[in-house]
Length: 356
Image (tube, rainbow, N blue to C red; front, side):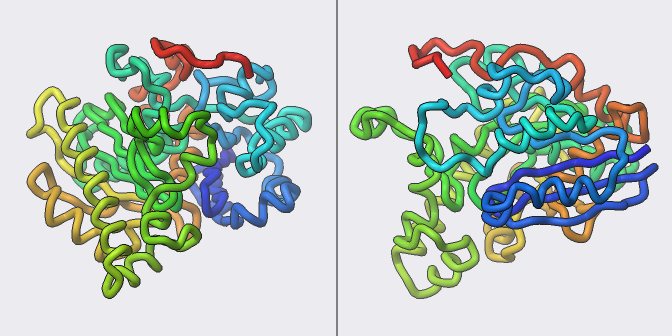
């Protein structure tokens, strides 16, 4: 059984494939290169055909659905981008999904946190980004990590996931092997993303566009919008503004982490805080989180099962395997991905423009 998982990241698109649990695909393409040449995506997957199932790049996700069955309404909910919007398209995701559909690759879209039945409805009120589909995929890797690290059953896995990506940061709560809450990248400061926008600031901005959420984060605060987290960290050693940016960033992550502990039935159930994403490659970031968050639980880096592909791509492949009845079926069944439902636009009580 051959399966593929894909992570459409802000910095890179990662590809991870398993053939009866043996790795046959582990590679990455810079996002900027993929935007310029979308054919690169298909060169990778065509090079490993045939395969049984691919978890396609899923954006804001849908209840589990074949790509071949996607409608334009579905596409809008995956992208959350108006057709009339003239800004630069987001990584060509829509174009790639339409081509996957036309060429009939065996592939599915997976849910985001908001679609999951394991998240209480009251937590979904006026929320869209509680963790995109790729964050659900990363959580699967964390569940596998705890099962193997502590030799425990799925239902005993309990942790907080912190993923610090190139653009966005997210924090998820996993109890009894199920995702029970999440704070998505639109709500926590990222390296580039501003995080939650103050209501009064939103009023002053006026018409908010996607571009507003891709700025205002660490790099913007430091005064160098195109810098990486590593570069800002280096500058922070001598530059007061860069240090301010890092302090604000870490404060945002810590607040979100402490806040999400309230989702657990008992706080002492939290066994680990598992760190993932590009940001944790920096020891200063890991050390800062450990120094504060150890008050909640043990803080450590999540295991990785590849040499190149990020954990979200690995988790996507694990999901594909589980959906086909493979090794990871018990994890995927317990997550209740097949019972996902609704829309990320459900339970919104603030008026907004609904036309795609």
